[in-house]
Length: 121
Image (cartoon, rainbow, N blue to C red; front, top):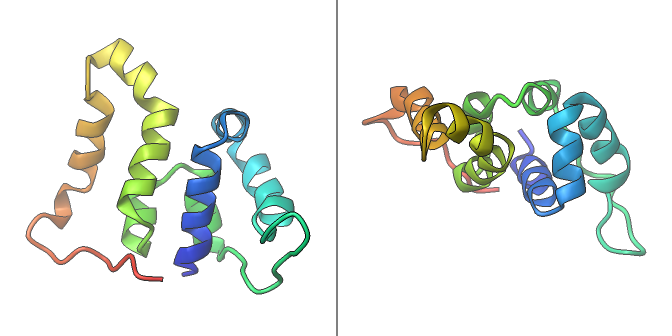
């Protein structure tokens, strides 16, 4: 897994309201666009040809599968913040405050007592 590249995706998309909107509405299109044109940018002038998402990473991002991302070693805080941005409003309307965070914790509950996957890149 390219933890760096997955984390770069999570960080970049979470901090741009337009990318976040696009990720919620059409994750496959946004992941493809990001991987081809946004992710490789190092700065305004340089591009990287070294990083690429694996098929498993790509599918987890497309499916918003934060459990799989966590298990692959994506940074838990980056995962939590982007998925809160995507789902918190609708979860709160249906189930009250912190309902998405509770679901996130419950779905990762099988890690209780185990050593978490390393987030080192």
